[in-house]
Image (cartoon, rainbow, N blue to C red; front, side, top):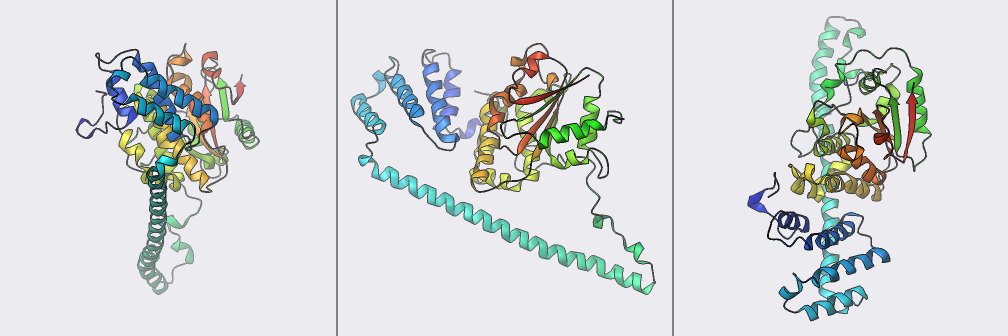
Length: 398
């Protein structure tokens, strides 16, 4: 069993669950694993990538199906393999006359899903309205006695200044508050507070801000390279915790998530914890994302434990990329937002980028993020780490 699996309520009908169990069984034929993996990958493309299928993918799917069912360790156990082959041939040739019930079932499921989404939206609107009314009532209850007291004591209006009324006041740093049903993701803000104040080089904020604002949609982000001691982490700490009138505040307003890699803190290198941090923090700024994830439930049911570390590419697909695609299809858009990763070279082997799971996630999945999300990465000047990020601009600081 994979560590972290809920053994009491296994969904053996799920391809990923069952195959991961069989692959770890020594009696399972090794020659079947590549065929089964190929079929599972096709299934994931169909079920997770917007439910679209072009001709090349269709050919690949049916080829993988036929390769698997004709395998020597499979075909003897299929009682009516001839009928199955006829069925597969009909589906491949778009002969759907015999599948009226299945098509009706799919249409009904889609209609039910639409109804559930409408219900969630109405509930959110209702909660927002009730919250507003309660807030107004509580505000009146709290402020009215103060006004009476002030008027009776002829105090100057300036004494009525209340902390929560100051529009300039914001939280000390970008929030790491938990949002959703994940177990508490790792909090890394404490590492930012250890850095000395970032002094001088204020031109760097303008340079990065301008680079991100003028970046075309095909460029995924910016890699900020500098040698040890330049102050990369101090720059990140200043930006994530920038005050309203400081130089880095424009960048801070764009930040929706941040991560810090520490070579001597293994938890910061765990891909599953990295994904949970991103998902939780982005949901704070994009509530529509959380509503979508709560509606689908796949992320919480399949990737709430150690399995997110085991299957981190599947985890980021289900928990973040697919929900972001879903809200984008529903018309959601916003101005450019920023994810910052400090010291990405410390997230794995400093001599081998292939041993860095977080770089692999960025290289293989970040191009699937909406174009309004950009990535700012800091790193030492190490070729293995920069080379895989081909869709990124690079600034090297002497």
